[in-house]
Image (cartoon, rainbow, N blue to C red):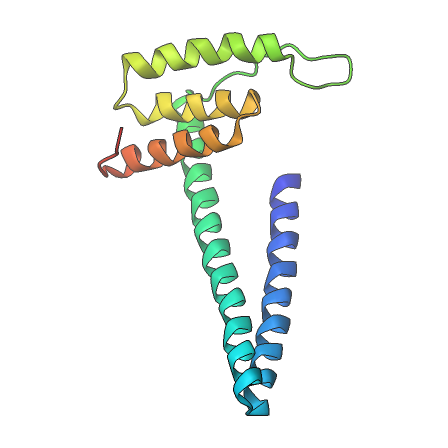
Length: 150
């Protein structure tokens, strides 16, 4: 729940920022000189890119959460079996062990979105966010029946 609240607050702050930047871009365009109109158009591009990025990221999170809920209903969510340091952080060797199992599971069933979901969690636990995101995107694509590049 804490992550959802953090995401919502961050998204709200970004939307406010996009509105402020967009209004500045409009004001620059209204000035009417060649330089200010050029800068105004350039400034308006930033909120457009930001809104697109926020939308795509929100879609990704919603789809990943839907997969997690479906996997939970099936009883297939990965169990947290990781050892922790005294400070509460995940032990790196423990994460590597779980990752090796999840990778083997995914290699054995490369078309199963469930194995890709669990691999994404293992990547995340191993602090490899880019690969975790790619694995989750693959799980989403497989779940939706879309073709996936190797």
